[in-house]
Image (tube, rainbow, N blue to C red):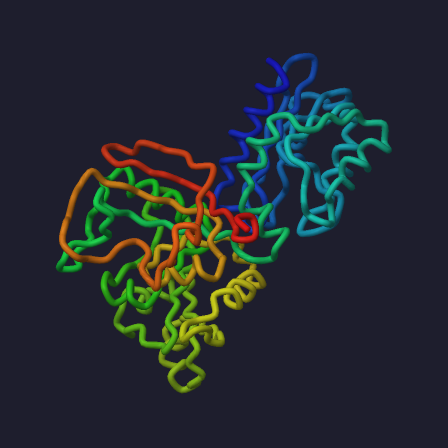
Length: 366
């Protein structure tokens, strides 16, 4: 096997931690000696051992003189676990092949430097783009302190997210809906507005085997979420945050009694200040959000510059009529003022199509 093949295996291992390691990165490791794999490991859960230490613990023979393939630069600081660089040095490993450099200021090249000082041979950048893409959430969060936001919506081929009567279940097929639940496991939280709660009374849970429910965030400026809604009545079992500008503490108690957490945020243009909300959520270690809101919340999120990626599910259907579209709001006045999307990928999911694109930030457009 080649360096690329070993790193590809490490990437596959890293992906197994998806949804369970937030706000840590997903990391995989493979140890090779004399052309044979003697151990594999990955970061399984936040707060538990990192990939390198799990791989070392799984060694079938002494790792002395072996090569370690790891998708992210080994950490060199004390956190929930001791530094991985110490374990690597003590093991006698003679070569380390790294995919991505760690942007965390506590690491950021220091891990590589520490290994080199101990005479360990270090190679960087093997499948770097793939390793970077795996941890796009972590890279954004560690640099900004705010969640990575993915705006997701499903629409028909004529751009409708509901029929003229407001019905929206179901626009896409089963395969596409399974992908949504995979993403609810992947991202730390799912966020909607009051309008979605009133229209659909969603549960916003992850309905897949071995899944993990995301934290549910409701943007509710005036605190009008029905107390009988599924969101509120299930808050004891699924962490739920209601972000509101309402400061009436007596009204708050109606929700806190049901185990909802109330976060008070100031208003901007008559709605929740989403930038301030993102800062608050980042401090709560929420590193990523799947935004499943309606047209008004989607517009506000774009306007406030908090959206990093857009997921557009397109079903081969036409509803016709005058009904809601994925993004409403005031809209732009000129084509040049549009929110531009780049680096698009297209995936077929049953009869549906998923287009995923990164949002080009306005400063880049200018």
